[in-house]
Length: 212
Image 1 (cartoon, rainbow, N blue to C red):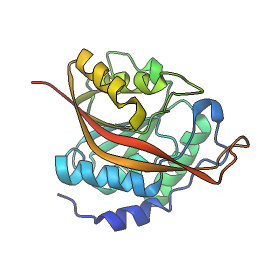
Image 2: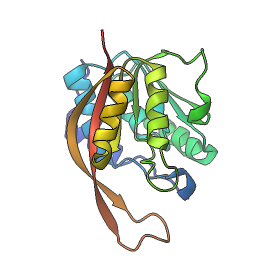
Image 3: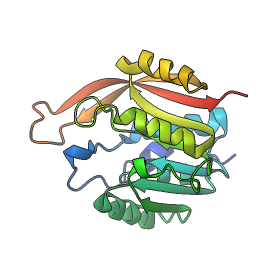
Image 4: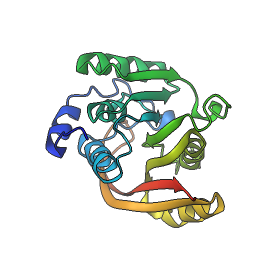
C-alpha cells in the first residue's frame, strides 16, 4: 500500500489551483484540502479502494480528488465535469503535479447513463452540488450516476440535514450506506451574494457499496 501521511497529502493538495471564476449556477465550490485529504486517506487506508484501482471523479472541478487519489497510487483517475474552464484548470494542476494517471472527460453528469460507463470504475469519488438551492435534487442525480458507474463503492459528501432522505433512497436502490464521518465544511465566500467570509456546513462523508 502506497504510504503518504495525511498531513503530507493535505500539504500537497493545498497547492492545487482553485476555480478562477466559479460559476454559481453550477454550485462550484472547491473541495477544501483538509477535507479532500481526510476523505482520500480514509478511502485508501481503511478500505483499500484507491491503490491500483480505476477511479471515477464526478464533477471533478479543478481536480483535487483525482490528483489526491493519484498521489495515493490509483491506477487511473478519470474526472468528469461539464465546465471547460474547470477542466483546463484541472489539466494544468495535473501537469504541475506530474501525475500522469489522471484524465478528464467534458460531460454533463446527467449524460453518463450510457453502456460504456456502466460499472466501468472500481471506485467513484465526488463532492456533488448539495442541490438545496440552485440545482435542487442534483446531489441525488450525482449519487445515482455514481452508483451506475461504480462496481464496488461510491464515496460522497452530503449535507447532514439530508441524511435520512439519502438513507431512504439507499434502501430503495438496495445499496449499503455507511456514514464514515461527520465533518464541518468551511465554505469560503465565493460569490457576491455571500455576506460572511465563510460559513460552516455540517456534512456527512458517506460510503455506498453494493449488497452481495
